[in-house]
Image (cartoon, rainbow over all chains, first blue to last red):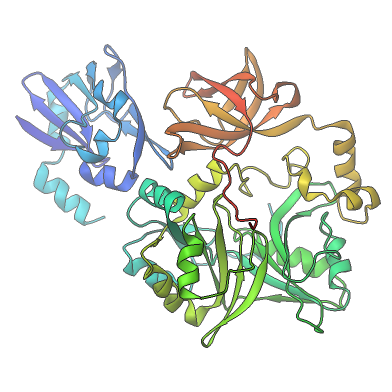
Length: 123
Length: 379
């Protein structure tokens, strides 16, 4: 399973022809205490760079973008009851949604873990 | 917006406690033209700490002014709708600067700091983002016989929370024995001349301490050495004041809103409402007599999704208002908001809807504050 990162601080795990998407630990740290996550419903068609979800911290609402094209297959129901999972386990149990991979070539433009770490260090 | 042509693009300013905040690991953001700490360990943690212990907030961006002279009270009463001439030394009053149309230029605290036998002097604390316009307004309208001083060498910190008095009393013994909410004293702490006022903007008991900039860091270190005290940032200050139902200038009121619509009628002293003689009196009294077309109210929102500033408020299909402050209440564990709603829909318990990202969130008009105030008014 390969994990990729976007410069908008989303991560995407690719497993066969499906992918799991969340926001990075760096992103949750910047957002602070998360109080609500609005997830796309199954069947929603996403396009790379377009709005996919909204994450609400105490302070503000922030958009989460689709890292690639595809269709949402499942939202993480656990975030409804416990949105703070995004703070405590952003790159694990705090995942946002699963999606199909519409265009695998789009993954080539994303960063790997080392690349993303270097990107964050440069911010 | 100001049309002053002399305003130039300036760099973000630094305040006396800038390095202190950074040393405490604060995340700094630009606010009111300055670098300010939005949070240290986290907004919710700082919020909860302030509600249960004591948070120390830097509010040095705010403008600290004095107006002095034999005619100071009478001159201020030309611009403020509250009674200043009857304000006793050591007493504090919340008031408003209004324009001719009755719009709110700023809200502020006025303290009578006249010393015994001394020249009448009033200490004003105004909002940071509006202070330069306020100073211009005061200079333009106050008589030349009174002196306006901008105390720009002073820092201002607010110690807020149910344990603020316990902590402060241990540091400055005997200070607070007779001090109740909305009272103020001069206090010489060693070589530091402080002005300590029992007030704040969190809904909790607490103190605002004006300190010469050069002693600000040492004062904050001294206060934070107390077990009850931790630094808290602007983020917690905003969620605390929202829970306390306190309006934030530039969001919950501005020059387009009169004090009656803003539900700040308490700041219009009865005698002064009747006698007038203050800027905006005629316009404000029209609204006061006829009743406002819309009013600031509290809104409790169902579910967990917060409604933010700018969200539209509906009664059925008709748009009846707009959210001016909104967020998630850590104390209540639910979203809350304040907004302006057409007067027909402002009764407590009225069911409304707020539109957020094309969804309608059920909401209910509730009385303010959302979380009860905890001011110390004496035994």
